[in-house]
View 1 (cartoon, rainbow, N blue to C red):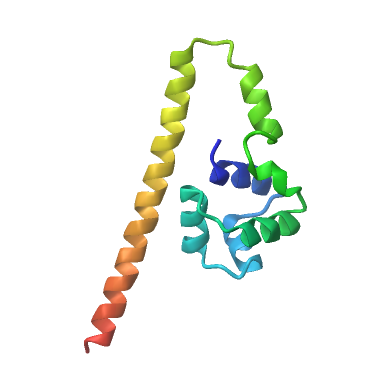
View 2: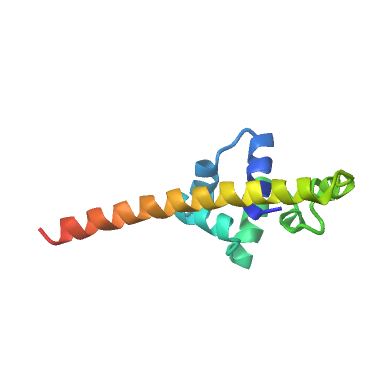
Length: 117
């Protein structure tokens, strides 16, 4: 399970948004989203996020995530179905990352055009 999926589930349960979390963590929305998608969040940021979300830090790791453990129990279906669901999640995450990177590229192009005037 991906870090972004875990964080989204926690935020959904608490009726909070990713933009709220980014403000609480003093991060940009795009930066936080990209680091969650890539799984490149720093240790101190994971600790801070767990305090803000009021969850133990271990929930962000697959081996201790209760949602992940439930998924393991439900894997009685053929492996192809599980592989398909994993690929669908990966495709969704890659599409989100592509969208985020395109937004960042637009912002950088806008900054370059403003600086070149």
